[in-house]
Length: 145
Image (cartoon, rainbow, N blue to C red; front, side, top):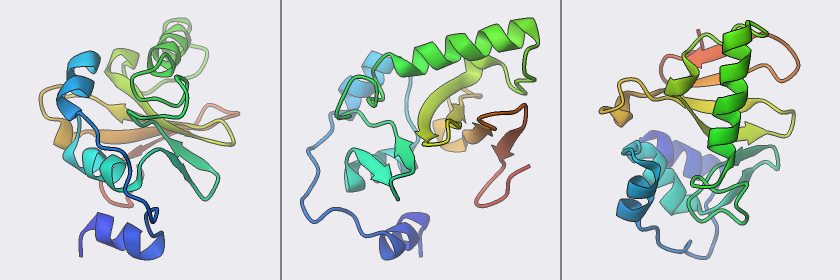
């Protein structure tokens, strides 16, 4: 079973087929290629939330603020860069290598670590603690470090 088939078994996708995504346009607009598993997830589920708690950025987001290509990824990167430069919170990765992919209702950010930039299928996920200094980096399936 793939990770997506596990997810669709636990959380069935919407009954209606999501709108198609022009991945070439999205990647050109972002200036980077995206992980194949993300493209499959976004194409299968469309925009929305999981358990009314985790929001995943999507090319067809319902607003510019929930869109993968909207203003939030660059705003969050600038916010993290300020923290990184000032030492406010110990951002464990270079903010230039972080790209916002989602968030929780508590305020945690889910970010791709886009290094190496030319190998998106190897990118890991970093998650910050919403009201504290902790960061968690996913090193692989279900293995936070």
